[in-house]
Amino acid sequence: MCLGIPGQVVEIVDIEKQLAKVEISGVRRQVSLACIVDNEHPLEACIGDWVLVHVGFAMSRINEDEAKKTLQLLMELGEAQKEIEAMSESLSQS
Amino acid sequence: MKYVDEFRDPELAKHLIREIESLVLQIGASEKEPLQIMEFCGGHTHTIFRYGIEQLLPKAIELVHGPGCPVCVLPMGRVDDCLALAERPEVIFATFGDAMRVPGSQKNLLQAKAEGADVRMVYSPLDALELARQNPSREVIFFALGFETTMPSTALTVLQAAEEGLKNFSLFCNHITTVPTIQAILESPSMRIDGFVAPGHVSMVVGVEPFQFVATKFKKPIVISGFEPLDILQSIWLVVKQIAEKRCLVENQYLRVVERDGNPVGLKAMAAVFELREFFAWRGLGSIEHSGIKIKSEYAQFDAEQRFSMPNLDVADPQSCQCGDVLKGSIKPWQCKVFGSSCTPETPMGALMVSSEGACAAYYNFGNLPQIRAAKSSNSKEQSKILS
Image (cartoon, rainbow over all chains, first blue to last red; front, side, top):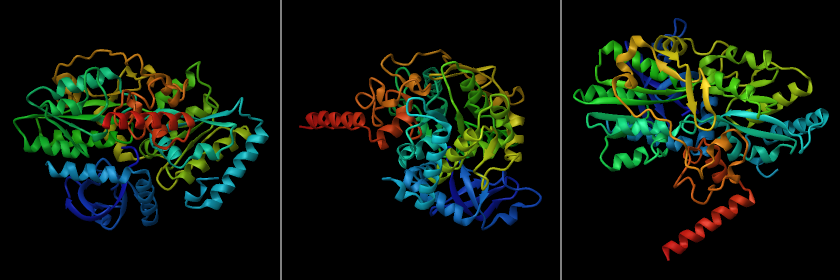
C-alpha cells in the first residue's frame, strides 16, 4: 500500500475526471492523474510519462530509469506480484 | 557481508557501511549503549529485512521498527466494526486485500465472506466507487485505511462521489496520521530514539515542513528516505553523520520523489474532505491525540460511521499476543510467546504477522536468528506429524 508501483501513461480516457490508462507491468488499468497535473504539465502532456501509482492514483512523476529500478525492487520484495494480482482481481469484478 | 552483493551498487554500499562504522566509533556508541534509529514506515521495515540491512550495520546501531503499518496498528474493535458493517445484507464491503486476514475478536473479513457477507477485495477506492455505480440498490462501504500516502486517493474519491451525487457510497474512515504519532513516540518516557528515518511516500504527500518539529523541538535528526536498500543505508548514514556532527535537521534523501511542499492537489483534497479526530486508538500504543482522521460534516453523507450503527467497542488483544510490546519496541518479535508457533503468516494471531510490512512477518520471512529457525523447524515437524 505504501510502496506504490510504477507505470507508464498510455492514453487519456476521461478529460473531465482526469482519468488515464496506465500500463503497469503489462496490466493496463484506469488511474487518476488528478494529483500530477497542473498548468505547467496539463493532462494531455502526460502521455508517455512514467508515474508512481498508489491505489489507483498517480502520485508522482518519475523518470524511466527510476521506474525500472523501483519495479525491480518491488519484484524482489514480492510486492509487485501482490499489487498486480490485486489489480487484476479488482478489475474482474467490476 | 553476505547480502551486500544484492545491492545495486555493492561498492557504494560497502563504502557507506565503512563510513557508518567510523562515525559510530567517533560518537562512542557501543553494543551495550547503541544508537537507536527508528524507521517509521513498514515499507522500510520490509526492505531492511529483505536485504539484511541490520546485519550489515555495526552492533552499536539498533534499528527500532516503528508503527508505520496501518493494518498492524488497527485495534481489534475497529475490525469488529468492519465485520458488523460487512454482515449487513444491503452492504457491499470493499477493502484492500491486506485487511482481509486481520483478526477481529471472533473472526476476520475472509471468514465473514466465506459465511456469506458480500466482501470485495479492491485495488483502489475508485473501484469501490465503480461498484457503487453498478449496484444502485446496494450500499457500498469502502474501508479507508492508510497513512497520508493513501489519503489523497480517498479524499478525491469522496469528491468524485459528491460530484456525481452518488447516494449509496460511503467510507469507513480509518486513516491515521504520521506526525502526531512521531511526536507521541518522542514524548513517550519508555522510548529513547536518537534519530529517525522518515517515510518517503508520506513525505511525497505532506512535504518536508511537517517534520521540522523533530529537529527544532526535540533536537533529533530526521532523514526522509527512499525505499531502495541503498536509499535506506544512505539515510542511516545521514542520521549518524548528523549525530556525530551534533546537528539536527530534516534532510531529504528521497529528492527524486519528495518535493518540499509535497503534493498540493492531494493536500487540497484532504483539507476539503477530512479533519482530525480528537483521539484515535492504536493497537499497542493506546490512544494518541489528533492521530486519526474523520470525514468533515459537509460530507457526512459519505461517512459510514454516521450512517450505520456499529459496536464501536474497545476490544483487548488476546493475552498471549504481544503485538503491543513489539510495536513499542520493548520486545523483539521473536521474543513474543506465540511467535512462530501459534502465530505465523499463514495463521496470524496478531496483526504484525498479517501484513508483509509488519515487523513479525518480516522477521519470520527473512530473519535468520536461531530462535526463528527453531520455531520454523518445530512448526514443520508438527505439520508433517499432522500430515502423516
